Amino acid sequence: MAIVAYVRVSTHEQNLDLQIDAMEKHGYDVLYQETVSGAKADRPEFEKCLAYLRPGDTLVVWRLDRFGRTLRKTLDLVEQLEEKKIEFKSLLDSFDTATASGRMFFHLCAVFAEYERNVMRERTFAGLAAAKAQGRVGGRKPSMDKKKIEKCVELHKKGVRAQDIAKMMKCSKSTVFKYLQQEKCK
Image 1 (spheres, rainbow, N blue to C red):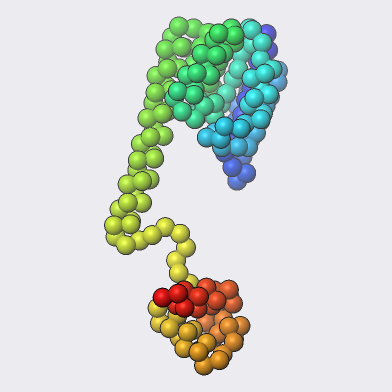
Image 2 (image 1 turned 60 degrees about the horizontal axis):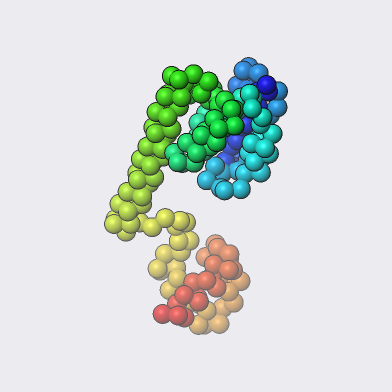
């Protein structure tokens, strides 16, 4: 009966140390770790972890959202573990499927985790829509305003090289070419 730990972060900017420290305090026999978004279908270390598990083992994760990204996926995974007689434990969510109350608490946590992700998503879309309605668009701000673009076009028509225009406008040559191309297409 092994205790198998699985830790995951979504990006390389994030750090696994906090999760690994928690696992070391809890104790484990085998540790699987990876840096990949939970939304990705391909999580190679997670697949190795699942393949390693045997009846009587316990899979331990730091927090429920490190395990599955959607409620349906999380419930399906825990159901598969239960069928194989493998227990599931989440350290921060403080539940263990070895008990009836732990299983109930797991289902409640899964519902709230899904709810939280959906609310965040709705807020993000609402914020983007509000910004768009106010005329703001995501992404980088234009490096030149309309006056500078007109000046670039005027200088270029007079035969000034793009490299020299870029120095005058304090931008890159590719930026000058981009705006010249845009004006040509109008």
